[in-house]
Image 1: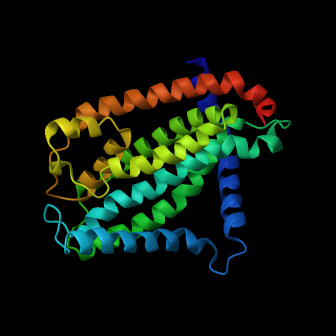
Image 2: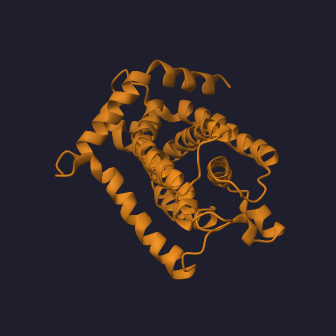
Length: 267
């Protein structure tokens, strides 16, 4: 637990540094493009349009899901995924990518996964703003339950930090782990409730799918924003989700503190 405490303290003390590095990453990534940062929104919108045409128009003929227009229903799952997917890959590679620059500096290396998280939060918030506008046009108006978005945002960020801290250490030691993560991330896309509703599966199959912690996050956002959704056993899933998150945070902190003085040796 001492390692976990030290890692968390480093995030708090270096919060301004994390924000500055995230802003620098965004500027350097899109600085040479005519549209600049707008690509962080345009690229997901192109993907959303393609998925809507294939799954919404092609497979469903525009039919709603539980009385909700398919596009709005899909966006409630897709937008969190557009944050989760790049954060998994960028967070796991964050230490390896910069360790050569910061190894000899008085720099809190544990903050590098947080930089990837903050970088990806900016397009997430922008896309969520457009989602709320879309929901209002569908006559789905803000209500008291929307305040739970703060809780599920906290869940998502905490889980991604715990996972990224763990993965970033393993990725430095075993570079093949990064390739494995890419394959696992593609698999997570299909076993997370982005395009399918939990009511589509039997209880036994659904119980297996719920072992995926991302299920809790996506269904949490969807249940917060949309009415008429199937029952979401958030209490049981919440206990499981936080148990996995804390386990990743503790184990990731221990691994990080144990190996970070030797990260350069693995380059």
